[in-house]
Length: 304
Image 1 (spheres, rainbow, N blue to C red):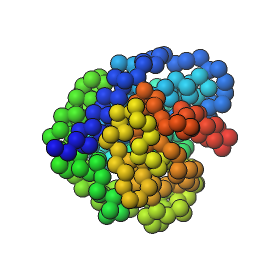
Image 2 (image 1 turned 90 degrees about the vertical axis):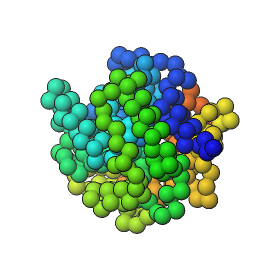
Image 3 (image 1 turned 90 degrees about the horizontal axis):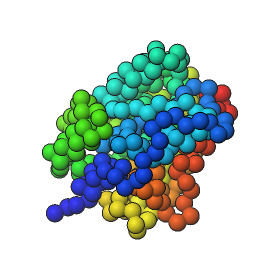
Image 4 (image 1 turned 120 degrees about the vertical axis):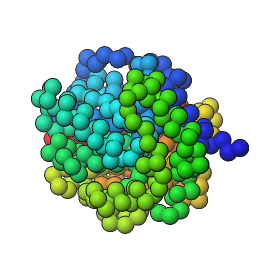
C-alpha cells in the first residue's frame, strides 16, 4: 500500500494536534516592524484550515505579526476545491471585513493553493488587493510535475481526500464549506489554465524569472523551499518526495516562481513553510515565522 498520500493528508489535516495552542486574541503590539498600511490576510492551502482548537495553520504567525504591529485577518476557505471556488469564498470574506472595518485594500499571503486562491481575487476584484505574496504556490506546471504526492492524493485517493477535507472543515468549525475533489482532478492543467486566465505576476514560461513585481496596480512576490526532508523528528517529512528536480517535497521550485522571486532556496519543505509540525525545521534553517514578519516589513517599506 502506498502511504505517502495518506501521510500528507494527515500531516496537513492534523498537524495542529502536535503544536501548542497560540492565543486566540489579538496580541498587543510590541513593535511596529510589521505595521503595514493595509491589513494582512493569511490564506491556507489545500487541506488546510484557519485554526483548529486555537492552533493556527500558519503556526504562531498571526500572533507574531500582530505583536509587531500588523492587523491580520485569517481566511477560511474550502479544504478541497478549485482555486476559483476558494477565491470566491475569500473574496466574500474580504468584502465583509472591508465593510465591517472600513478597509480599502489588503495584503494577501497564501501558502500552496492559497497563492492561486489569492490571485483569483486580484483578477476579479483588483481594487481590494495591494499585494500578493505566494509561498510555495504553483504558478505554472510542467508535465513532469504531475508525478507528485498531491496529484496522487487527488486522483488515486479521491474518497480519502474528500473525507479528510470534510473532516478538517468540521473540526475547524467550517463544516459548511463545500468540498469538491472532482474540481481539481486535472491539477496541472488547472494550474496552467489559471495562469492564462489570471496572468498578473506569472512568468512568461515555466521556471521563468520574469514575473513582474508590480503589475495592474498590485505588487507580487514569491518564495519557496527546496528541501524535501528537513528533520528526522518531523512526521511530515515521511510524506515529502525527493525527486530529480528541486522541490519542497510537494511543489517544484520552478513551479513556484511568481512575481518578484525573493528566494527559491529556503531549506524548508512544504510543511516547514507554515511552521508546522511542532515548529520543527532543519538544523540551522531560518525561522519561518521571521520570514512572514520580514515580508510584512518589506510591504510596510513599500507603503503597502
